[in-house]
Length: 351
Image 1 (cartoon, rainbow, N blue to C red):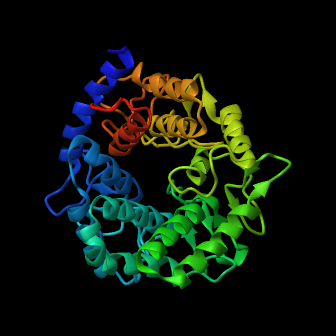
Image 2 (image 1 turned 135 degrees about the vertical axis):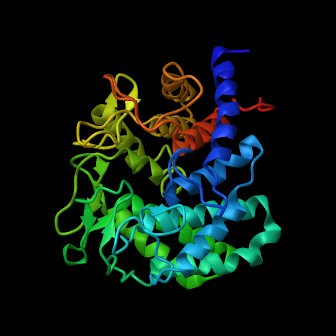
């Protein structure tokens, strides 16, 4: 057995335990066992990954999401983060459309595993779709949006016609999958409009997709450009623009083999939280999945192995070169680990 497979098996066992510890009695999935914070986007990845360790966490979490949305006045529009009881961590709640998109993706994956749940999921799917479409006006969102990383200073203002590219990808894919499941042409049409905006986010001179586009484009490099390939399938891994964008990520955001979030990232989740962002293991695993999709298994293994060589049984939110430790364990890191291990066929009983 290869050392990478052995290391993976140790982390697989730890991941099952950590996922169980993150599940609250009401179905909420927190970011870490010692935290009461829920980020729906991250929890969506956990529900997709959990079956690989024999856990089906989706039904209870979906029920929690539905109850949370029904208790709010946002008509299906999710915020960046909640406490475990379903109260948004910011007032007024911040609209973060990629949270809806990720949830639709995870529900589609659940229906793929359990086709008999199609009718039962329709009410929640319709609520999540409404949360996106009620604020969509063809040229962008009519309501101020907050981007996926939750940076309080990085918002999409309607008056600036600002649209976050990753959010558009998550929403477009989520709407497309929901439209295909429930035969809804309007949902598919709105997804098509969002795809047009994503195409317009391409910058031929910089060879990347804008992090956000609008009256003033945000041209900084963001690792979540990877999401345009997987899991949201806006572009294939070998599509020329996608390959060029990933090359830019490697040029700008890779530090000794580890992946940073985006340019000028200062957030570290510790102390005053502004001492400089670290390496995010989840993003290394995301890069690994991308290169599996592209057919470059050597690179995929290198990004995967980089993390395994530096951790034991628990994966942190961030990794640092100094005394800082990062939130440990971090459920989203473990979810991406499982999904990357699956892509590399490193899970038990996978050849």
